[in-house]
View 1: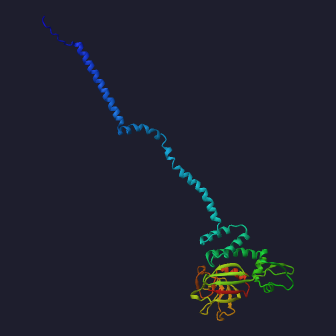
View 2 (view 1 turned 45 degrees about the horizontal axis):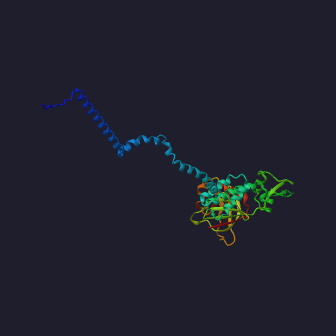
View 3 (view 1 turned 120 degrees about the vertical axis):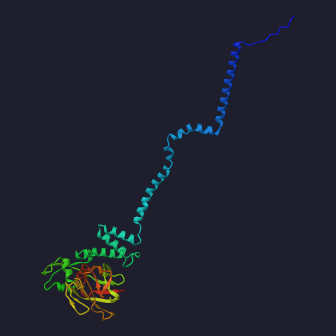
Length: 342
């Protein structure tokens, strides 16, 4: 029997089946490869950053929320502002020191509507150890107190010790002035009498017994008027150049309105002449006690040059503003004591 050999040759259908199977295997291999690559990609750090971007959206939605964190200090700052108010108020009521604080206090006193309260406040400043004699605060307080005192004095306030007097036969202004040591001008002003007015029997007048005396400080260029022990008023003054204003005790020997000036060269310069340096009033000083009796020719007078006040420009006399010396002229009787100190 003959050996028969069979050979198999796939037909075209078999070939299609094998090609389809290979394609499927290839697709599956590619899918497996892609899946594996994706898994590896997710594990890589860079991939985490890429995927985190969408996750960052929630914080981005309310960006103002984190920015509200600094609001805590803002609230804390507001909370401290009310606490600062009591501190400022307490500082306003605390005792003041220093020149600026003293002047601020004086401004507050001026606004007081009660004269008695203002008077006590001025006296407290004037007696304070923190307010040196002649300082700006001392001058301001003394001058302001003086205005209150003048108002009381010329309006016959009960606090000034005025008393009523019934004019008797034989009375005159001169006689009353000598008896009660009052300038005639003061009696007229207190009682609002004109210069031409005469007294008549039974007329009721207001009089006062004052005890005025004067102290002059050359170093501070300040004239202080006292009524007894009480400071009445203070005035800025000018004094002599090169130390020519004498030191010692004096009294007012004479009082002159519209004085002529006896110049050092012997000339008599009439009142009203532009060379007359005495202003509107002259209060003649004469030495008393142990003061050198050669200190003559000195006085307290006015000036047409207010720029010379608080300066050393005179020949030795004490210069005042015309309005100030006119005030003294009315207040001070003859024989008023004057002390001039360095």
